[in-house]
Length: 419
Image (cartoon, rainbow, N blue to C red):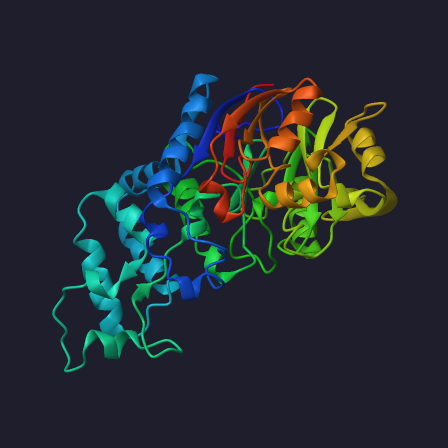
């Protein structure tokens, strides 16, 4: 059992969390590539960093230890002989660097960065042609080796990973183990390489069981995973997580992983079939737990839902699946063994406010302790409703961070919750 991970709910007091401070990857966002890189707009980096620093400061003020993904990764690569070399070779392959000459040039450039943290930052930021000043061993130019895009020009040798500040998605902590995900898009799946090396080599986390692996056949993302309690998990069947991935996850959690035989404390998984759209990208855009019996919800998810209850079967490796069509309120109350739960609508029921604030992640909150949640400042209508419901709000400035389409929950991956 990992001594470094402990997450059994969404609301237990948060003690340790993994963030990524936005970096130069946001400067390497060409406007013409926004759709490919899954961005709707280009954040102003200086302000985004100020907002993110305030987010981290708010968490520290609540007694939370803030871990940075880039620092954990550097520590992992420094902890084992050959780890950086192994990572570099794999990163080059996954960055789609083509041709032996181009691979050599990129590897020499990365190897020239002596500081491991700066090296990690560069792999996240991407590499532009303007950065490379390496001699070529052929008569070809760098332009010949890189090639051109549809417009006849290419500025990038390796794409940036601008979504990295949403640490919720590449992996998810469940109990004392990890879902190391295979993400829906090639652009974001590259981010999971950092989780691979952290959970393989970092001294504090290398013994963590993997309930899911990034080389699995099916897609899943951390925004679709909610820890309801020590024995119960909620997972979204969504645009980004396939039902077959949840089956694999359940087999590993219930019966033990094939690699190490580790078994999770989870004995029940509720799989919520949610609409396949940008508005319902992940389960945490549909509902997020904020107190013992309270959830913020997307207002358009009310009514009967298709939900599947997965439990351990009788035969080795078997997963029992029971379909239960019911309301979200009833399913959550039953899963938490409560008489009832309260569902608080984003936007307070006003359709225009709900649409606007859902776009700005009004229901994507991070619970620091029961009834105490981080929210985006800009969602004033939803925040007012939460205040009136007795919640304590920790307000995060969000003019630029919100342009990436993710809220405080998206920007955080809890490593340790008390309870």
